[in-house]
Length: 142
Image (cartoon, rainbow, N blue to C red; front, top):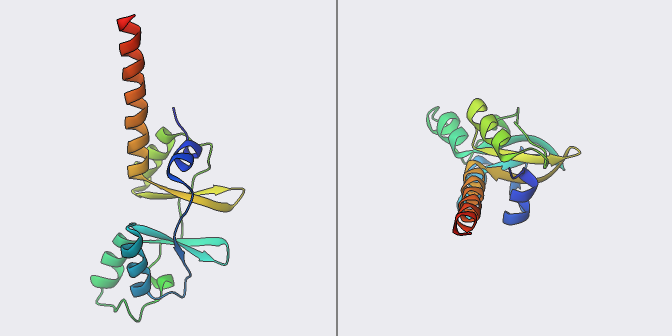
């Protein structure tokens, strides 16, 4: 089974982040510009939270707040579920399902090195299954 390190090597390690003082509107604009569903919230280089489209919908829109006047710190999820590069895709999918999250920051020695999404995990599983099917076809064909 593939691990997180394989996913990051395939997709690259860039990730997008904001600070706790960034206005929610600016965070949403960055998400839209980069076509991502979540951003890491960093205080210097330390991971302090994550903000997702879900946070915006539930903590700004439904509460009648303004995205222009609300800092990310007020709506971010502070207790971030993280993974290491050595964790397997299966472990990540179980974690995402159990914790009901769609994005996992990847930390190596407490340093953020990337982010994986549920879509990245599904793609990794599909790719692995394709390889297994091709190996079986070659074996059967002799």
